[in-house]
Length: 139
Image 1 (cartoon, one colour):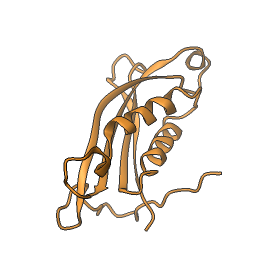
Image 2 (spheres, rainbow, N blue to C red):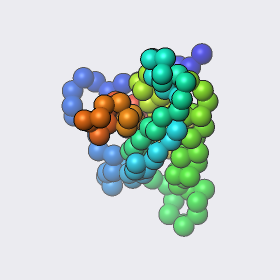
Image 3 (cartoon, rainbow, N blue to C red):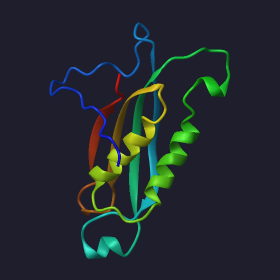
C-alpha cells in the first residue's frame, strides 16, 4: 500500500521551485502528450484519449561536474509518466496526477512536484479541462 505524500499547509505561501539560497533548481517538462485510457463514462473506457502533462519539480542541487548522474534526469521522469499513462484504465485525472507526483518524488532529490494533467477532447468549446496538484517530499 502506498503511503500518502505530505501536503502543504492550506496557505498559498509555497516555497519557490528554484531558490539558490535553499539549494533548489527547477526541473520541468512542458506539454507532454500521452495517450491514456481515462474517464468514468463508458465511451471513455473504450478508447484512449490525449492527455497533456506538465511537470514542475523543485530539485535539491547537487555537484555541478557536468555528469548526468548528478542531476534529476528528465528523460527518466518522462518515461515514468509514459509508463503510468499506459498501465491501463484510470477513472480520474486526480488519480493519474497523484501517481505521477508519487513517481517524481521517488527520487530523493525531488523536494516538490507540481503536476498538471489535462484532458483535451472533453468539450468542443474548451481547450482542456484538468487538475493541478502539488506534493512535497517528507523531511
